[in-house]
Image (cartoon, rainbow, N blue to C red; front, side, top):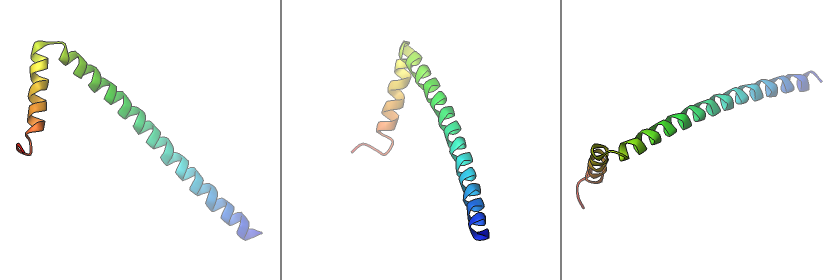
Length: 70
C-alpha cells in the first residue's frame, strides 16, 4: 500500500511539471503569434509605399542570390 502511495505521489509531481511546461509553451506560442502578426502588419504597410516595395524587392533579390545564382 505504501508503495502505491509513493508511486501515486511521483506520478502526481511528474504531471504537475508537465502541465507547467505545457503552460510555458502555450504562453511562448501566444507571444510568437503576436510577434508574427506585428511583422505581417509592418510588411503590409511597407508594400503600400514605393520605397517599401523597392526595399522588399531588394530583400527578395538578396535572399534569392544569397547562395549564388544557379
